[in-house]
Image (cartoon, rainbow, N blue to C red):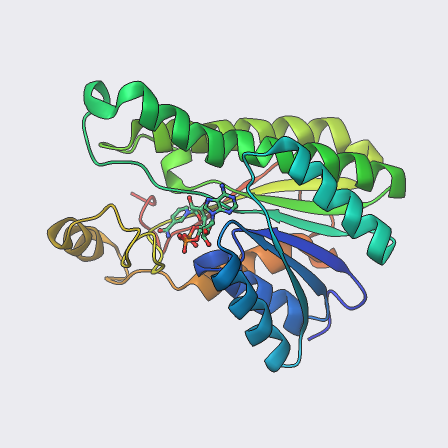
Length: 253
Ligand code: NAD
């Protein structure tokens, strides 16, 4: 498997879950992966584990809420490697499980700052770098909560709808510059966001989600990574501006 041989990939939220699985898969596909995350310790360990598996990876601590840091990282990648071919803007946080009227402005702002403005902070310098090169592929992580409503998660759902709007708009603007931009929309995936210490779900809520799912199971992070790899490889050369649902059929009905 060498779809990304010689490519430089930048992944945010790379220390855990979907970002880590995608880092592993892209490295196995031949990319040099720049793994960025807020969590320094988990990020260092994650990059070391990708390297132990024979991949090429470096870790950079990044807070996607910091626009300057996002620009500086993209610039440093281009300076060090000469080009940026692939970007996966994936860092995200969940919200509470309360009614919209109880969400509060603080939670609203916190979720929007990371999930939507954070993607914008990364996307802008990536587009500049890729436009100069005349090519590139970018995937932003949305969610099935960005394609419909998500009771109890107003801020999260709004942030992911925003990611899809941003993705589609950028795709329209940059297609003529050789840059493809897509959104991936995971369903319920087994990561620390759903089953670990960052989970917003209570046990019964998660059990209900699993028993209502057509496949009767959560998705695996690797199953999202496969879609992201395809969207970033030349195999999807005519695909841009899409919202690609990977949810085991949850939204099929
Ligand atoms: P996760 O919690 O395992 O990973 C998220 C990573 O993002 C963490 O390593 C965290 O440190 C990092 N991060 C958080 N805030 C950051 C910031 N300000 N700057 C940089 N990094 C930051 O969760 P995951 O499930 O792998 O989530 C990845 C993406 O997938 C998120 O955007 C999430 O909204 C989306 N998503 C997840 C699911 C799911 O069921 N797990 C479903 C739909 C969408």
